Amino acid sequence: METLNTSVATQSEEFQANLMTAILNTFQMDGEADLEHADNFDEINARFSELVNYLVKAPAYQLAVDELQQNDSAARTIIQERYSAPIPPLELLLDLPRNSLGYTYATSLQAAGLQPLDVDPSLFSWERVDSDVSYVEYRYQITHDLWHVVTGFDTSPLGELGLQAFYLAQFRLPSALVALVGGLVGFMVSSPEALPILIATIEQGWQMGKNAKQLIAQKWEEEWEKPVSQWQEELKIQIAN
Image 1 (cartoon, rainbow, N blue to C red):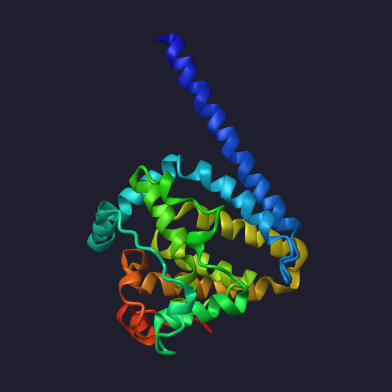
Image 2: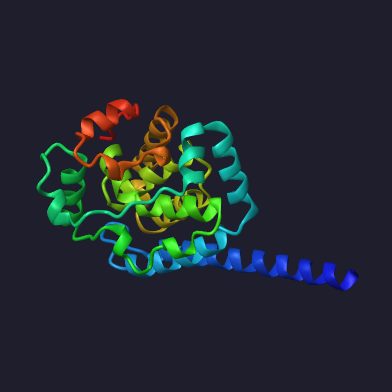
Protein backbone atom coordinates (compact mmCIF):
# COMPACT_ATOMS: atom_id res chain seq x y z
CA MET A 1 0.00 0.00 0.00
CA GLU A 2 2.86 2.36 0.83
CA THR A 3 4.40 1.67 -2.59
CA LEU A 4 1.06 2.46 -4.28
CA ASN A 5 0.69 5.72 -2.34
CA THR A 6 4.23 6.70 -3.24
CA SER A 7 3.53 6.00 -6.91
CA VAL A 8 0.35 8.10 -6.86
CA ALA A 9 2.16 10.94 -5.12
CA THR A 10 4.96 10.81 -7.68
CA GLN A 11 2.47 10.92 -10.57
CA SER A 12 0.71 13.89 -8.96
CA GLU A 13 3.99 15.75 -8.50
CA GLU A 14 4.97 14.98 -12.10
CA PHE A 15 1.61 16.26 -13.37
CA GLN A 16 1.94 19.48 -11.38
CA ALA A 17 5.49 19.98 -12.65
CA ASN A 18 4.40 19.44 -16.27
CA LEU A 19 1.46 21.81 -15.82
CA MET A 20 3.68 24.54 -14.40
CA THR A 21 6.18 24.06 -17.22
CA ALA A 22 3.38 24.43 -19.79
CA ILE A 23 2.12 27.59 -18.05
CA LEU A 24 5.60 29.11 -17.93
CA ASN A 25 6.19 28.25 -21.59
CA THR A 26 2.95 30.01 -22.51
CA PHE A 27 3.89 33.07 -20.46
CA GLN A 28 7.32 33.11 -22.08
CA MET A 29 5.75 33.12 -25.54
CA ASP A 30 3.40 35.94 -24.52
CA GLY A 31 6.33 37.94 -23.25
CA GLU A 32 8.30 37.43 -26.45
CA ALA A 33 5.37 38.12 -28.80
CA ASP A 34 4.93 41.34 -30.69
CA LEU A 35 1.38 41.87 -29.50
CA GLU A 36 0.74 44.65 -31.98
CA HIS A 37 1.39 42.36 -34.94
CA ALA A 38 1.32 38.84 -33.41
CA ASP A 39 3.59 37.32 -36.08
CA ASN A 40 4.27 34.24 -33.99
CA PHE A 41 0.68 33.44 -32.99
CA ASP A 42 1.02 29.93 -34.44
CA GLU A 43 3.74 29.13 -31.95
CA ILE A 44 1.78 30.73 -29.13
CA ASN A 45 -1.26 28.63 -30.07
CA ALA A 46 0.89 25.48 -30.08
CA ARG A 47 2.14 26.26 -26.57
CA PHE A 48 -1.39 27.09 -25.44
CA SER A 49 -2.69 23.82 -26.91
CA GLU A 50 -0.07 21.93 -24.91
CA LEU A 51 -1.18 23.80 -21.80
CA VAL A 52 -4.85 22.91 -22.37
CA ASN A 53 -3.91 19.22 -22.50
CA TYR A 54 -2.84 19.52 -18.87
CA LEU A 55 -5.57 21.92 -17.72
CA VAL A 56 -8.39 19.54 -18.70
CA LYS A 57 -6.93 17.05 -16.22
CA ALA A 58 -6.56 19.57 -13.41
CA PRO A 59 -8.95 19.35 -10.41
CA ALA A 60 -9.75 23.07 -10.77
CA TYR A 61 -11.36 22.44 -14.15
CA GLN A 62 -13.55 19.62 -12.82
CA LEU A 63 -14.68 21.80 -9.92
CA ALA A 64 -15.53 24.63 -12.31
CA VAL A 65 -17.58 22.36 -14.59
CA ASP A 66 -19.43 20.90 -11.60
CA GLU A 67 -20.25 24.42 -10.41
CA LEU A 68 -21.40 25.46 -13.89
CA GLN A 69 -23.82 22.55 -14.11
CA GLN A 70 -25.16 23.18 -10.62
CA ASN A 71 -25.82 26.85 -11.31
CA ASP A 72 -27.21 26.77 -14.86
CA SER A 73 -29.73 24.19 -16.05
CA ALA A 74 -29.32 25.08 -19.74
CA ALA A 75 -25.55 24.60 -19.51
CA ARG A 76 -26.07 21.31 -17.71
CA THR A 77 -28.42 20.11 -20.46
CA ILE A 78 -26.05 20.83 -23.35
CA ILE A 79 -23.12 19.28 -21.48
CA GLN A 80 -25.00 16.09 -20.67
CA GLU A 81 -26.37 15.94 -24.21
CA ARG A 82 -22.85 16.37 -25.66
CA TYR A 83 -24.39 18.58 -28.32
CA SER A 84 -22.27 19.08 -31.42
CA ALA A 85 -23.07 20.03 -35.01
CA PRO A 86 -20.89 20.64 -38.07
CA ILE A 87 -20.26 24.20 -39.20
CA PRO A 88 -21.51 24.67 -42.79
CA PRO A 89 -19.07 25.75 -45.50
CA LEU A 90 -18.50 29.48 -45.43
CA GLU A 91 -19.92 29.75 -48.96
CA LEU A 92 -23.33 28.62 -47.68
CA LEU A 93 -23.25 30.98 -44.72
CA LEU A 94 -22.47 33.88 -47.05
CA ASP A 95 -25.84 33.29 -48.76
CA LEU A 96 -27.69 34.14 -45.54
CA PRO A 97 -29.03 37.64 -44.77
CA ARG A 98 -26.29 40.17 -44.09
CA ASN A 99 -27.41 40.78 -40.51
CA SER A 100 -27.51 37.07 -39.65
CA LEU A 101 -25.15 35.22 -37.33
CA GLY A 102 -24.00 32.94 -40.14
CA TYR A 103 -23.19 35.72 -42.60
CA THR A 104 -21.45 37.86 -39.99
CA TYR A 105 -19.44 34.88 -38.76
CA ALA A 106 -18.36 33.93 -42.29
CA THR A 107 -17.37 37.46 -43.29
CA SER A 108 -15.43 38.00 -40.07
CA LEU A 109 -13.43 34.82 -40.69
CA GLN A 110 -12.76 35.80 -44.28
CA ALA A 111 -11.62 39.29 -43.27
CA ALA A 112 -9.19 37.82 -40.74
CA GLY A 113 -7.96 35.14 -43.15
CA LEU A 114 -9.21 32.39 -40.84
CA GLN A 115 -11.04 29.10 -41.24
CA PRO A 116 -13.75 27.64 -38.97
CA LEU A 117 -12.17 26.13 -35.89
CA ASP A 118 -13.63 22.70 -36.58
CA VAL A 119 -11.15 22.23 -39.44
CA ASP A 120 -8.13 23.32 -37.37
CA PRO A 121 -5.89 20.24 -36.87
CA SER A 122 -4.44 21.70 -33.65
CA LEU A 123 -7.88 21.96 -32.05
CA PHE A 124 -8.89 20.02 -28.96
CA SER A 125 -10.84 17.61 -31.13
CA TRP A 126 -14.18 15.82 -30.73
CA GLU A 127 -12.36 12.47 -30.67
CA ARG A 128 -10.84 13.48 -27.33
CA VAL A 129 -14.17 14.23 -25.66
CA ASP A 130 -14.57 11.58 -22.97
CA SER A 131 -15.85 13.57 -19.98
CA ASP A 132 -17.85 16.64 -19.02
CA VAL A 133 -14.63 18.63 -18.71
CA SER A 134 -13.25 17.64 -22.11
CA TYR A 135 -16.63 18.40 -23.72
CA VAL A 136 -16.71 21.87 -22.18
CA GLU A 137 -13.19 22.61 -23.44
CA TYR A 138 -14.10 21.30 -26.89
CA ARG A 139 -17.28 23.38 -26.98
CA TYR A 140 -15.51 26.54 -25.92
CA GLN A 141 -12.86 26.08 -28.59
CA ILE A 142 -15.21 25.12 -31.43
CA THR A 143 -17.51 28.12 -30.82
CA HIS A 144 -14.77 30.62 -29.95
CA ASP A 145 -15.16 32.70 -33.11
CA LEU A 146 -18.93 32.85 -32.65
CA TRP A 147 -18.36 34.41 -29.24
CA HIS A 148 -16.24 37.06 -30.95
CA VAL A 149 -19.17 37.88 -33.25
CA VAL A 150 -21.87 38.22 -30.60
CA THR A 151 -19.72 40.05 -28.03
CA GLY A 152 -18.13 42.45 -30.51
CA PHE A 153 -14.58 41.68 -29.37
CA ASP A 154 -12.33 41.48 -32.43
CA THR A 155 -9.50 38.98 -32.96
CA SER A 156 -6.68 41.37 -32.10
CA PRO A 157 -4.61 40.52 -29.00
CA LEU A 158 -6.60 43.15 -27.08
CA GLY A 159 -9.93 41.76 -28.30
CA GLU A 160 -8.88 38.22 -27.46
CA LEU A 161 -8.11 39.19 -23.87
CA GLY A 162 -11.42 41.03 -23.57
CA LEU A 163 -13.17 37.84 -24.65
CA GLN A 164 -11.13 35.76 -22.20
CA ALA A 165 -12.36 38.05 -19.41
CA PHE A 166 -15.91 37.47 -20.66
CA TYR A 167 -15.26 33.71 -20.50
CA LEU A 168 -13.94 33.93 -16.97
CA ALA A 169 -16.89 35.99 -15.75
CA GLN A 170 -19.31 33.38 -17.09
CA PHE A 171 -17.40 30.35 -15.90
CA ARG A 172 -14.09 29.76 -14.10
CA LEU A 173 -12.42 28.53 -17.28
CA PRO A 174 -8.80 27.74 -16.31
CA SER A 175 -7.40 28.41 -19.78
CA ALA A 176 -9.04 31.87 -19.78
CA LEU A 177 -7.36 32.73 -16.49
CA VAL A 178 -3.98 31.61 -17.81
CA ALA A 179 -4.53 33.57 -21.04
CA LEU A 180 -5.34 36.74 -19.10
CA VAL A 181 -2.31 36.46 -16.84
CA GLY A 182 -0.11 35.65 -19.83
CA GLY A 183 -1.58 38.58 -21.75
CA LEU A 184 -0.85 40.97 -18.91
CA VAL A 185 2.74 39.71 -18.80
CA GLY A 186 3.05 40.06 -22.57
CA PHE A 187 1.72 43.61 -22.67
CA MET A 188 3.87 44.61 -19.70
CA VAL A 189 6.98 43.41 -21.55
CA SER A 190 6.24 44.49 -25.12
CA SER A 191 3.67 47.31 -24.87
CA PRO A 192 3.62 48.75 -21.33
CA GLU A 193 2.00 51.96 -22.58
CA ALA A 194 -1.06 49.89 -23.59
CA LEU A 195 -1.71 48.50 -20.09
CA PRO A 196 -4.43 51.05 -19.20
CA ILE A 197 -6.53 50.19 -22.26
CA LEU A 198 -5.86 46.48 -21.67
CA ILE A 199 -7.13 46.69 -18.11
CA ALA A 200 -10.18 48.67 -19.26
CA THR A 201 -10.90 46.03 -21.91
CA ILE A 202 -10.60 43.22 -19.37
CA GLU A 203 -12.95 45.07 -17.03
CA GLN A 204 -15.46 45.55 -19.85
CA GLY A 205 -15.30 41.87 -20.81
CA TRP A 206 -15.79 40.85 -17.19
CA GLN A 207 -18.88 43.04 -16.73
CA MET A 208 -20.38 41.88 -20.03
CA GLY A 209 -19.86 38.24 -19.06
CA LYS A 210 -21.42 38.72 -15.63
CA ASN A 211 -24.53 40.34 -17.11
CA ALA A 212 -25.06 37.95 -20.04
CA LYS A 213 -26.77 34.59 -20.10
CA GLN A 214 -24.55 31.52 -20.39
CA LEU A 215 -23.24 31.48 -23.93
CA ILE A 216 -21.94 27.93 -23.67
CA ALA A 217 -25.55 26.75 -23.38
CA GLN A 218 -26.45 28.07 -26.84
CA LYS A 219 -26.96 25.91 -29.92
CA TRP A 220 -25.69 28.48 -32.40
CA GLU A 221 -25.55 25.98 -35.22
CA GLU A 222 -29.35 25.63 -35.26
CA GLU A 223 -30.06 29.32 -35.88
CA TRP A 224 -27.47 30.65 -38.29
CA GLU A 225 -30.12 32.85 -39.92
CA LYS A 226 -31.05 34.67 -36.68
CA PRO A 227 -29.84 38.31 -36.66
CA VAL A 228 -26.81 38.99 -34.49
CA SER A 229 -28.71 41.81 -32.80
CA GLN A 230 -31.45 39.37 -31.80
CA TRP A 231 -28.89 36.98 -30.31
CA GLN A 232 -27.42 39.87 -28.34
CA GLU A 233 -30.79 41.02 -27.08
CA GLU A 234 -31.90 37.53 -26.05
CA LEU A 235 -28.60 36.79 -24.31
CA LYS A 236 -28.41 40.23 -22.64
CA ILE A 237 -25.09 41.06 -24.28
CA GLN A 238 -24.08 44.71 -24.26
CA ILE A 239 -21.82 44.89 -27.31
CA ALA A 240 -18.15 45.74 -26.81
CA ASN A 241 -16.84 48.99 -28.28
